Image (cartoon, rainbow, N blue to C red; front, side, top):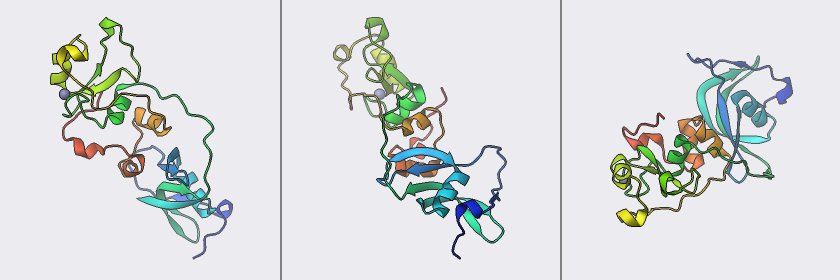
Length: 197
Ligand SMILES: [Zn+2]
C-alpha cells in the first residue's frame, strides 16, 4: 500500500505499554551521525513524508483508518542537516561512564566510581578533562595522589564529548536498540556494574 501524505493520516498509537512515557525515536543525520530524539509519532510522520527512512522499529504499532505502521525507534534523514553549533554537555557520573565505556581508565576493569585525575585537594578541576571512570580498587589506591606517584597511566586522555547525543546519555534516555548507532558500549556487556548515582 502506498502511504497517504502524512498530514492526512490520523494516527492512533496501538502500542501496549504499562508506562505512560511517550515512545521516542532516535533521528540520525543522513551521514548516520546521531542528531536528536523526537516522539515516535513525529519520526513516523518523517518516514511517511519520505523525509527519513526507517532503520529500526519497536514492537508497537501506529494505526490509521486504512493501514498500520511500525512504531519507529531509529530513523535516518534523507537529506543531510548541518548542525550549526555544538551544545555543551553536562558533566555527571552517568555521562562520564558512558564516555569511558564503563571501564576503569587506569586498569580496564568495570568502573564503579568517578575519579579526579588530579585530585581536587591538589588543585584538580571538576571538568571533562580531569574526571574519569575508575574501578573501586584503583580509586581507593590512588587516593589524593597524582598519577606518577602511584604509577598509573590513563588509557585515554579524557576530553569533553561533542556529540549532542551525550546530552541524552547524561539524562539516561538511551534505548538499548539505539546503542549500535551511538557507538557506545552496550549496558548488557557490563555485568553487574551499577550505574545508579
Ligand atoms: Zn582500575
